[in-house]
Length: 265
Image 1 (cartoon, one colour):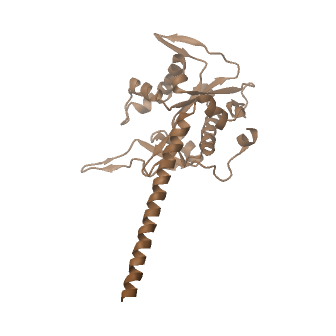
Image 2: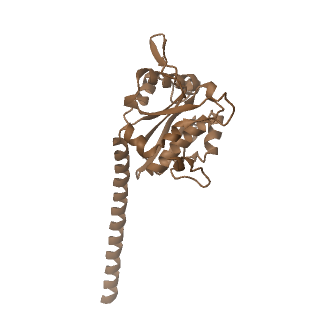
Image 3: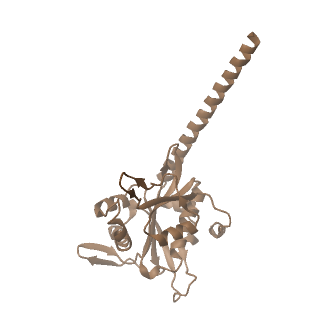
């Protein structure tokens, strides 16, 4: 009996050691995830761009006929945006998405949206025509850089518990004249390539359920409704449908995806 008791005691000790080891591993993983995000956000725009964004990916020539027009992208942090550049991005959001925001649970609050756009760790990819120079126009009291015809913004942050490092795409908008040229897909591919290079777990975004075209576009790129996305709610008298979905995909390159940007780096 004593021997059996010793064996039982030894088993308990091994189990305790195993649990402690797993907990230490989990704690190390959390610290590692935290540090990855902190380290990436500590990099200035120049360092981040030289490390993770090949210069050739900041040029785009549409496949479709477009009179030979080419486009260039500029990478900037929110703190480096000129006021007319910020105003141009805000104007694109208002023009393309205000009608979706107003009836939604988010509502349309310009000051709140501008504050979000200027958050410390927000980064931007600004779209201009190849040879366009900044062109400042006054819309009332607002100065807008009308050379900016599209943009994508993202943050590197954490999602869920335990902490998972993600690249979260906040906005992607194009002027009407630039749609159908593949620029949206190019911007998304660039963001997804950045996510793969910085080795975050997921790429995430939020989309209005009413925007069926955007939903289809994201699904075609491998995005699916995330586990943290809000669900429809049943009340006593009715079903309250959610007006937006949170979508995600792996931060790693998916099977069959192009690696051209890596080859051009």
